[in-house]
Length: 377
Image (cartoon, rainbow, N blue to C red; front, side, top):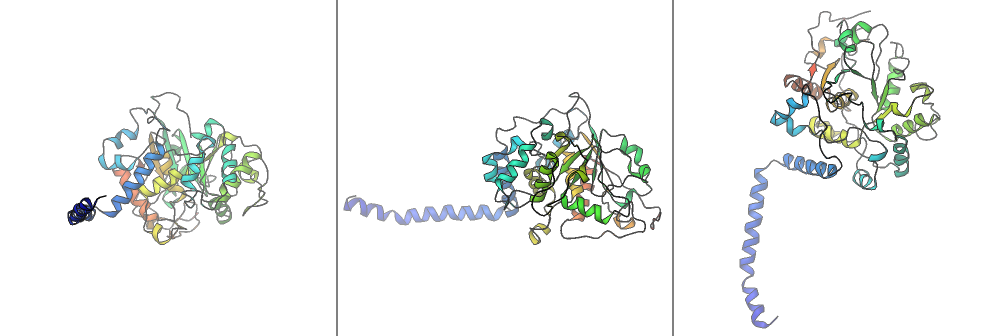
């Protein structure tokens, strides 16, 4: 560069600096006008969309009765629901690129501090096409109706058993005691959802109430929630029909939970992406910031959101309502027990969500006024 050109370039520096400062000022003005939470949300959505990419061409066709049509007509709901996010993970969802995206995210939103080989081995066992979906529609215009049954005390004396059984599919969770409560909670079970921790805790805590085994039937499908390594290890052992060989549950025999000869198509596992998506969109509680290693949506919430992303019409029974304090914690409690809130779940936020979705006619929530504030057997 000649001396003359150098001098000319230097003279232009103040002008360039002013341009840079102007652009920066406009950037700050823009940023101050936009809420940081919405910026974060947009980044999450962009990541979500980039992940989906070309993996799924379009949403599945649903019948006219489906609540998805209600969602599409509501601007706010349409922004929250994304039916392209896969609900389940199986053999074909485990790729090197997927590992790169999830291996730095802690459970249940990813595979941080977990073994690539262990995750890959477990998911390779979910090879059957039925492991990738909850059910297959018999006809494109079939209206699939699902009931999700929580264990709330509101069901005590409800007489909702027949209504629950009338649904095509019935989801149950954790300490799902049926014997002796058939009139209130029904007898039908299509899906049983759990983490290994919630399953074992339920067996220990509610054994005397009558929960001495998880629902067991060749027609029942088991939905694992991957809260940690132990869920993957137990799932692999259950499919292979062998004891758990390592980790927290070493020596456990999955047959004591799922029977001696379960079929591979009976097992499902929620996708970490789905859990991350429903947490970010619907249940991003302040507890997530305060207790990031502890908080996650409850088992019941995850099953209800699973149903809302797969079924056409969804009814929720035994979930928290505004007057929860009028009922016992569980429908099978021998004496009234108050619902206790812990830091691992935000039950009040979940209750507000169910109330909102009920009012928007996305789902139907069973509610009632208590007639017996101190239920006893």
